[in-house]
Length: 396
Image (cartoon, rainbow, N blue to C red; front, side, top):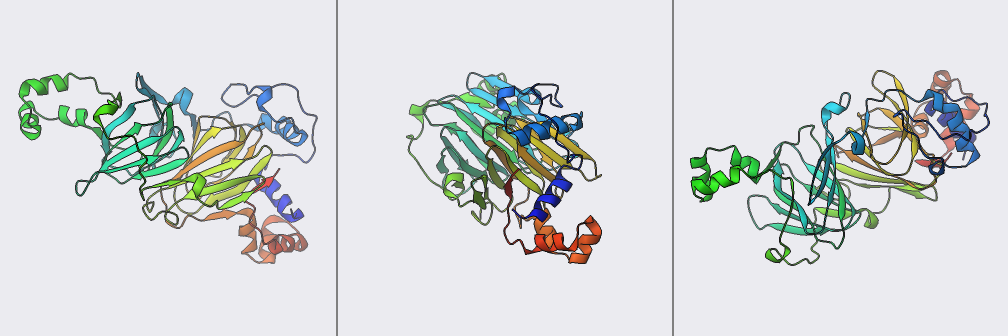
């Protein structure tokens, strides 16, 4: 790694960091959520320990761009599974999207529904899913999504998600609107006068009365013998992170994105998976197209973000953390744990997703301009400019 790149990365990402390293503390790290990360979850690497010892006092007491869905999300639970939702009003300035976490037991489903105001994308974290879509014309589309697989549901299309595996299924769903306008059969039917509904669906008014007394469950079991056989079906609406060439991959980690360049159906939203080895740094960057919802699936990290007002937030992040990142907001994260840090990012815009980093930003301006802006010597700036690689993830 070139010296110039190391210097500018460290200078801008961790603006409050001191060059002087202090002895690592043996005490567990105190987070801004007033919880303690167990010492066994934190890397024993001396650089990580020294960095955390220095930066722990600088953690933001308030981080309005983050919630933990397991402790702060809206939980709906029944015998069929678990649904945890965040709402846009839980985030500062989030007007762009939503992300939900689901768990379904075997032979359970997310009941047939549609989103009047949002496109849906998702990924299976564990298990096997069957997606059924009816678009109002043609044949019903039915396809399978396995672990690490993705799917997309166009706006207003009727669809259902079933667990067709032999184990509990876990998955994430993201939308490109802060109001997903979730509608299903029961809520739609219940909104109509009895006589209108009876005429529309061919039932008697006594049948209608029974329907309107039914508890609305977004999750439900289903009778597998009454449906299609559980066979693998594939669709152009689905991809799999394991079968897509990563944008970036080294021994420090990988970044894989599924967007319109991979699948033309993903022209409205995109989904990205980042895996970082212990001690790896996702270099400071920002995106030029679309807001991002970042979800921490596993691992522990140190996260930094600068918002539109120039205010800087530092936070320790862990499993279940969901961070809203407005377009153009500068951010970075470091794996401070003993295991891989696995992160999913949902983009509410998929067209021309570009990433600007410190290195490629410096390389596209004159030496004199960067010298004047940063105080770096001309020699250091030239060293950065000559570096041809694009290291999105680097050793800390």
